Length: 212
Image (cartoon, rainbow, N blue to C red; front, top):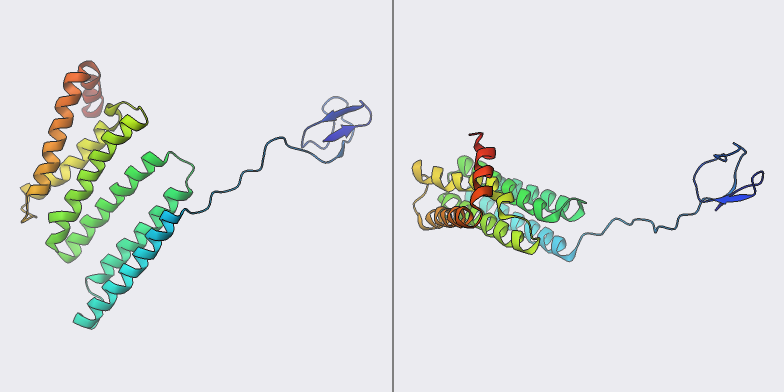
């Protein structure tokens, strides 16, 4: 607490001079609020970091033994490094973690697409991308109930997500169609549900998204 000897008052302030008489204040400032401590990375992040590093070493070793160099594994390693960076950001961000997780999986889908076009491994388009898309749509449904946010809040995200499996099917980039069809079916169910239970809001949101 600082004190003005001229006014004979105590002030909880960081000012050097009294706001009333401009005389120099003496003493130290004191705050009633505890100092904010940056939260430490959780055990989940440490597990993700350990698994990512272990996977990177194993894939690099296998690729080197087969091809005497890093060919496909370099994209896997870059994806894992990106995964670590994004995960670290989520666990240390002050923003809404539910939205951060959605952004995290959107980035994972982008990394998977880049990885596929560099390696042409069908496992990525057959399983990895469709599962990531399915997870995001299910996650937005669950999080809307938990946080009591309107499901329509995530409609634009789900529209963006369902485009990917549709494009994979139309471009014949997959040999295993079931997961992509499940993604499309889930999206249709979401749309029908929103239409029947939030008819007016649904129309407004569609107009807003597509600028109709």
